Length: 144
Image (tube, rainbow, N blue to C red; front, side, top):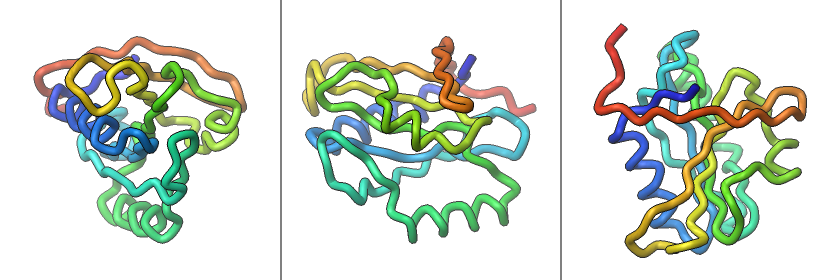
């Protein structure tokens, strides 16, 4: 199960809506080994596409160096789908290279960047196997 605080959830949704009609992407880092998503990092979709996302390699390398220095790891890897449901595509599954991460997909297909709900779902993707998991949105994460 993914447990995420309300501010981070809202930040991911706002990023997805703001970038619509292009896909948004980013990472939520957290302390190594904690499974606690604590630091939202919005990334640039280098593909600039409504049907595909790609992290900018320079930006991604800088983030990984920063996470390494801070003893963090990617707890959540997220992106949006603008015209389809929040389910990993074959391409998404192929790009999933962090077996310990939660892969969050946000679908903005119903309301785009307007007010209205989004579809927010989380998955574990390991060796090409996709498993959906529950998402618990809490006011704040426990400090331990």
